Image 1 (cartoon, one colour):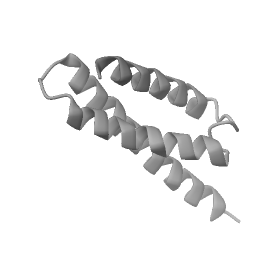
Image 2 (tube, rainbow, N blue to C red):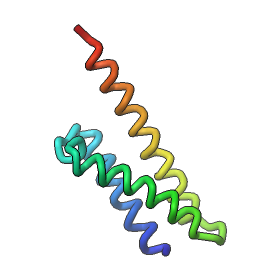
Image 3 (tube, one colour):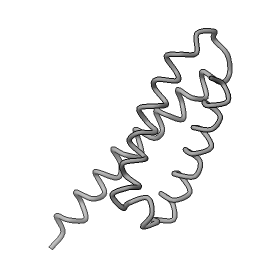
Image 4 (cartoon, rainbow, N blue to C red):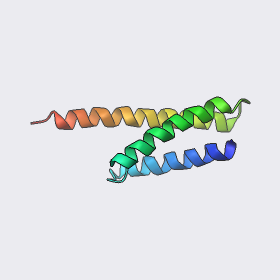
Length: 84
């Protein structure tokens, strides 16, 4: 399970780079679907890792950061579309 957690965190790093670069790959339909699925998988992996260790904390922090990016993206989209 720890290997899968490291894979998800690597994917989160890729999503963060795409988000900063405003990549059309991330904001396409498939990109958004994979982003939301990875967030759900992050919380599932967090629940599956029982012993308290660094990987469990990292997966919690990185998944929470992904949720923050989704919310921030929604606010940015709302602000941009409401401009005349």
